[in-house]
Length: 140
Length: 154
Image (cartoon, rainbow over all chains, first blue to last red; front, side, top):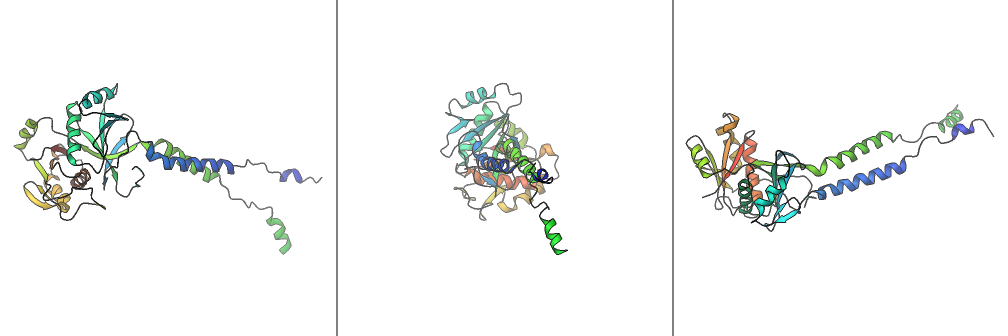
């Protein structure tokens, strides 16, 4: 045995498997992120300069799918009990803000009627959600 | 000399240091996990409380933008970006091409205090929602903090 040999043993942790796992997790999250949104699949309109509407937490998400069906968060509601369901969705939120995710294939009438219904339920102003043109289309 | 150098070369660290790479990737992972699914972008819009509100304000300079289905036939989701060239809208009783909207809105509302920067938008019910939203986008790009009120089209 030579004296120099123990110093040549590998003393650092092999982090290659760690990197593998982390990269795979990263890719999974990148791919899954657009599908993790609440509510139905909505093809949001493309526009040039939408302003930030903050994040989804603390917002009431109203969605209109391409058939004109109304959704509050994850549940589909009928137009008749929309206002009631919307007020029920507020819960103990101090400053409820409603955002409207309308499908780009809808005509304006469906969106306007939903806005009027939201207003009649006692919420002033809605955020009309769009996606920035050129952003990926994975949200479909 | 030559042989000595070769002998030393095997002791040099030949592996890439991947610790900074791991740091960056972990931070990216955390960003994607926390932020990505939750951010939204869009436009604030309002519906007038009652028609009386609109009537009361109409005495002053109320800026109305009308989009008719005949002059601006966006009945299907527009393809590509922007809006069709032939789309004409009515701003303040004047028919203008939609492309001139940012400049016109800036002209009229640019000098106003921000609480008076209100645009009343009367869009035809048959129009495609995406087309209407793109026109809203155009109008908003002319003036900062423009407030949009959707009124019923006549």
